[in-house]
Structure formats: C-alpha cells, structure tokens
Image (cartoon, rainbow, N blue to C red; front, top):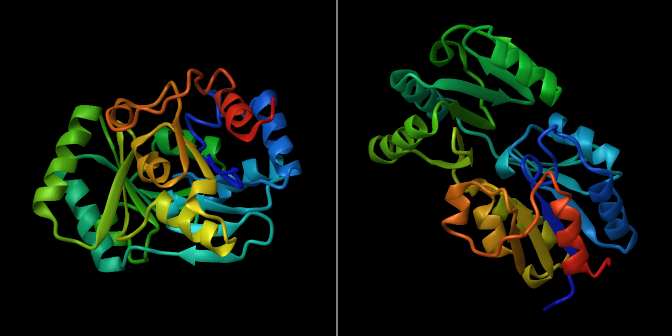
Length: 268
C-alpha cells in the first residue's frame, strides 16, 4: 500500500458523533496526522459556513469540500477553489418537480437556506448548522438565483420513489445523491465529492493511491471508490453498505475516525 498523504473525511455520521461533536480522540488523531504533514480535508454535504466552524476548531487549513463538491473553498482565507451552481432554469424545474411530488424542499444559495414557509425544522436546522434561512413562499415562483444544491426530504420510501421518478421524468444537467435515506440532494452535473477530492489531490501532486477517504453515506461512495483506501463507517447507511464492503468495526459514536487513522496512517 502506498504511503497515505491525504485524508478526506465526511462529517455527519462519520467525523461527528450523534451530538454533532468531534470527540477528543478524533480531534487528537487528526492533529497528529496534520503534524506529520498529511493533508486532512473535510468533505461534506453541508454549507461552507457550517463546515468552516469545525475546520477552524480542528486547525485545518486545507480547502473544504462542501455541498457534495459543488463548492470547494479555503477554510481560512475563503478563496474559492472551484464552484459549480445549478443554472436558474434547471433549478426551477427541479423545485417544481419537488412541489408536484409533495416533498419538503430546501434550496441552498450562498450559504443561506431557502424554504417555502417558516417551520420548526428550518429553525432547528439553522441553529444546528449555524446558517441563516429565509421563508420566501412558493419556491418555484420566488427562487431566481443559482443554487449550489436543492434537497428533497421525506420518509425513505417516498424519497426512493421520488428518485426513481426523477430518473424517468427529467432529462436535466444534474447530478444527485443521498446523504441519508431521507434526503435526496440535487447538484449541477459533474458535481461529486470524488471529483472535488480528485481536483485537490491533483493540485498537490498526490496520487489517488496516496488518498484515504472515510464516509458513511451514499454520497461518499464515489469518493471511497476513487481513493486508494476507502473505508465506510460501521454505522453506514444501508445504500452504501450494499455497494461497499471495506467497513470499519467502529462507528461515529465510538471514535471510529481515530481508529481508521491509527490503522492506515500508522499513528498507533
């Protein structure tokens, strides 16, 4: 196995425990990796602002992969490495599709969450993720900007059905994935954590064989597959476990990331 020079870590369900915190053991092992000159990258479906808070707390200076790869931005200086938004007409069609199917729809534009109406979920999400939100009425009539991501949320069975119908109905320049069985995320065509990670590795002259990736959801699959070493968490979603069999014996509540770093970076 090639020596690992870069580590990409998903956040929710991977680095973060169920209280959305980074454990002390995970924090210490990440610092140890950084001290050894290993590049540590957060790769998440979250907004930049929501991810930046954790990057700063972990003293990570690498660019952050956010919105599943739609925006890659430096944690400290804020310089944009790459940005890929849905065009406004495509976004409107996607939003209208969600409205027709009766699923809860969220639109992300420049680190602001847009929803149709004020509700407890939006308020709680805003609080937990440290971002602002705006209730603007019917989204298909009031969203004119270019979003980074549109999210449909509902019960898993409904989301499965919506995903199938999205395949059948729409011939649009989009990519989409699941961050949980209840959350379908739609981005511009070509957007993925894998593509963003590959870009960062190439900029640093790091070969894919020298990359370790860790995740727990279907939106991590391409990243795990591309990396020289891809490890899924014990608590990974069923959709990922059906496709990926390199699975840690530790979960996100048991310092899983730290043990993966121990093993593949030789930190023990």
